[in-house]
Image (tube, rainbow, N blue to C red; front, side, top):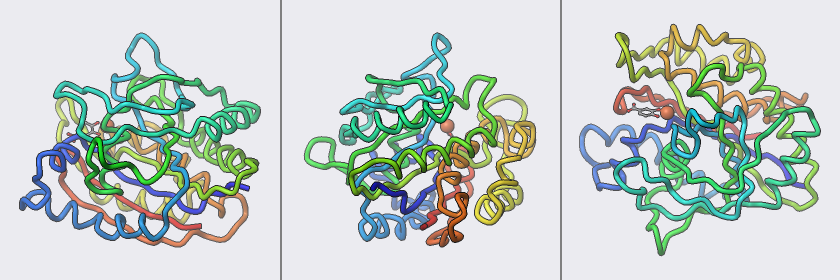
Length: 287
Ligand code: DHB
Ligand code: FE
C-alpha cells in the first residue's frame, strides 16, 4: 500500500524563486533564508519520496475570478511553470502522477469532499518556489524534480475560503485515500504558503513573529485546536495573506497521530523574517 511518511511546510514567496533564478542566494539579504533550507535539501535526498502531494494556492494564474474552485486536484501527466509576468521560471516541467491522483480524487470525493478535477493547468510560484527551496536549483531542460508531483490547489484568494477545520478533515481523508492505493509508494504531503504577511492596504508589510511561532507550536502539538483558528484570527494577527496558512492544516491532518498513531518527529523547524513582505516558516514532520 502507499503511505504518507512525512509532511513538509514552507512559505512560497515569489522573490525567493527570483533570487534563485538570478543567482542571488549568497547575497547578504538572502543568505540566512537559504541557509535554513540546507538541512531540508539533504533531508530530501535522504528521504526521497516516490510522489509529492503538494497543497498550494494558485494566485490568479491558472484560475481567476471567472472560476474559483475551493479544492482542485491535478490529474494531468505534466504541468508547465506559469508565466506570472516575467516569463515562466527557468525550472523543469512538473511531472504529475495521473494514476495516484485519480485514485485520490475517487476516494476523497467518495468521502464527501467535492474536489474539482483539473486535467490542464500551469503552476505558479505557489508550487514551484516550495519545490525550488526543497530541491535546489534545477536546470529547466537537463534537470528534473526528484519525483512526480500531484498539485492540489486551494482557494485562499477570494472569500469565502475554506475553514481550517475543513482543511484538517480533508487531510485525514487524503491519508485514507493514499493508504487505500495498492502500489507500494512513499508519499510526502506538503502544506505551503503563509506565514504572516499582508501585501495590500494600510497594514501592508505586517509581520507577527510571536503569533506565527505560537501557531507553529500548536500545529505541531495540538493540530485539532490549531484547526479551530477562525479566519478572523489569521487576518487580524497574520495579515490578509496569512490566511494561506489554512493549507498547512491539510498536510497536518494527513499525519499518523491524527488517526490515532504516534506523534510525529519534528525533523526540522525554521523561521526567518523577512523574505520580501513575508515571514518564512518551515517545518518537516516525520511519521
Ligand atoms: C509575496 C508573498 C506571497 O505569498 C505571494 O503570493 C506574493 C508575494 C511577497 O512577500 O512578496
Ligand atoms: Fe501567496
